[in-house]
Length: 330
Ligand code: G3I
Image (cartoon, rainbow, N blue to C red; front, side):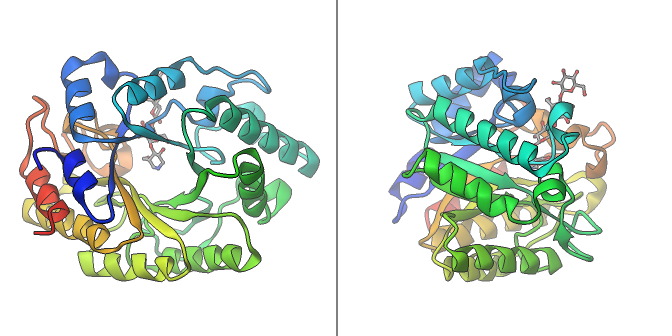
């Protein structure tokens, strides 16, 4: 295989190779060329979030999202909708809403309208994102439901309800729960596991779980063996698993260059070896555009996070070679 995308297509069963794509990135020809050559799966980095799509109540704004979805389709790439119900990038009119019936109605309208708009073009959705929090971003300490407007007004059943509404809107779509710092072993992923198992036991229409795989500060560290064992307990529930937002941050010296290469190889290999691991998405294309560079918790202080597979000239890094090896079963 000469590209990651081709390696993913040849894997048995195939693995979708994804990237977070930004509208800004698509303004650069090198970015577009590498993104389309190497990937066959797209997540919009920001353009399909609630604040982007429904900036005021009931008024939808599709332009930026349509641009990404249409570009992806022109390049034979699938798209995963990201994300229907999330506490972040939620407009103020929504995060400040009160009353169970009001919040339920607003959530129903958002899911129905957004899925309806894209229905002919995409059938993978992050339905609920990051519903669980802990004392630390690394997933340690007192896991609990995040007190979002949805949880505060509806209760924990908002999660089941979101999936049920999504299923009504598109009976064939793949519906995912997505979260960070649940990639290996910690208190947070045990809590999420029990939450997901409860949903499966109740017959809630969930198809899979996305493990974001933001490794290094401000999130967790994860060895390949721990990731493999963790993926397995979720697939044992009958679910698909996805690596949904992978990057490995080198800022702050927490993860060394050598550790970064090992993690990239071993974590991708864990997905490669798990038949129900259906996709690996990297959270960006080139280091210079990574969200980590400007995120205070990432300890970058103006430095590059060096977190991805391509450098700023869009050349392949050693991280790319290690990922490719893992996708070839090496
Ligand atoms: O668009 C505005 C711009 O108008 C304004 O001038 C500028 C000043 O701050 O902000 C711009 O918005 C920023 C936006 O990215 C677009 O660049 C926001 O401040 C910034 O907070 C936002 O960050 C995004 C972050 O989600 C917000 O939660 C990152 O790009 C995006 O990579 C990140 O992605 C999330 C996933 O969706 C969910 N999992 C975690 C992951 C990493 O945090």
